Length: 130
Image (cartoon, rainbow, N blue to C red; front, side):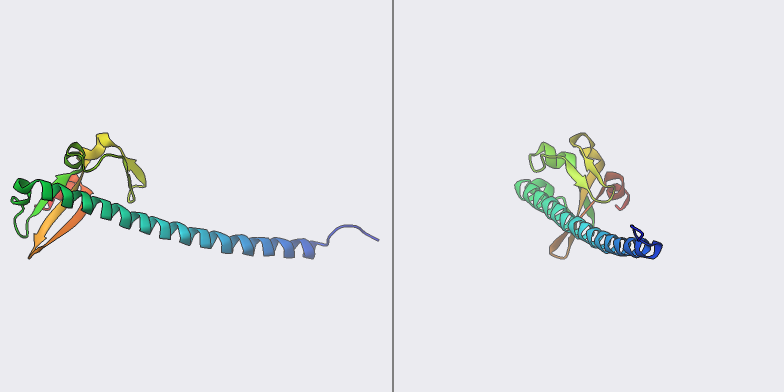
């Protein structure tokens, strides 16, 4: 009597292991995408709250915002005023934005009718849109 497994049995085990790993990796990738989306929403909420606080404490800047014209507020301005004090993760480049790079990023504030809109972009993009 032979001991061991036949080739068919070994192949069946490999196919089952392959299916299980494929299903689990797909679920892990979906969860990672969901976490990135949640983090992006939290990032945008943080930036919006920082800008709202910055504008409410600086009425002279708030009064400079003209309807339908974009006003850039750099991360550096927010940091120097105490509204942003930590390095931030950029979800588009998948890298941390350090405090020394804050001058390269801004929040574009736009006044439409009676509502403010906010967009986080590279500083050069905010300047080019005006």
